[in-house]
Length: 313
Length: 124
Image (cartoon, rainbow over all chains, first blue to last red; front, side):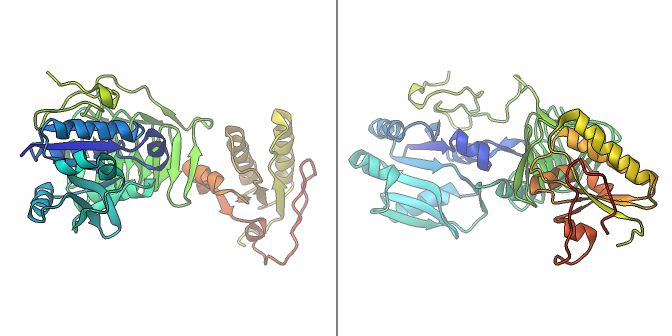
């Protein structure tokens, strides 16, 4: 039975403000985590589209797939990280002979639905937008976090560092729960205190202290003597010398402090800056709007419109 | 209150440029020179603080500490408090939500911060 998967990412505007499935968690984005999970099912067709792409375009994609013989479509509206057992979900869907199965956790719907081909062809708009009439509820009891705020992102990072969820850091374990990517430059005087993650092409200068529960994603540069305490640096961020970053998420020049629930622009103060992204590296391995017709294929990211999907060679 | 010296409340200049900041620092220096263990309470009215503010604050600390005094910051917005913590200025200045708390008296006690340009004087 052919299975297709349509992953709809959060819109860019939402993502910038609240935390995002595009933010890497210990070296890999939540989007990548979802895609890898889907690929283990051996899906025939996988497409990743931005939420800002119109709903009609997304629906047309699903209808085209259904007409092309795809029996079931897994629709994932990104907004959470959840370790859903898709094989079990499909089993549940079959056993109940459901037209639509929606996944819920204790807080409500997770944005994951399994749609039957006939439902899509019969009533495509209802299948994505208001599928409650014929939907069945699949209760998920495993690990899940809604990525609705920087605080939720931090929770996911800390849980991943502590091994409370299934996220595997993209690096080598240099000590107990200390993960360093081989391409990172860590000065010998740097102190890594407890569980932490240092991502690819990141530079930690002399005297830097990375406290427990902290993560530094790819292509960051932390200047002399700066310390991190229960904080995350998102990719391409430079931090000035002598700072003490506590319980915060720093994305370029924007610092979000979770203790006081305020955002501060560090750019005018010269305390942080956005580094030029590395052309040779991206945490995302999946092309937006690109279909993957083989399981477990990772292709370099290239942003495309949803209706410009082509087959990879 | 561990300080025995005079307490002065001063509002940090929000505008006025380099000259105003220079005057402010001169007033603080004079106050510090004339006192033993002075306590300077800097009222931060602005929501955001810029690099000049940080420099000025640090200069105040240098001057006041020469007389074994200390500097407190009052009225810092959450944004300003984050910057003070981030730059580790909180290791050399005490931060209080209000001037009253910085002075260490009951809210009902009347505190009249000096206006900009006024000479510093003993407030408590």
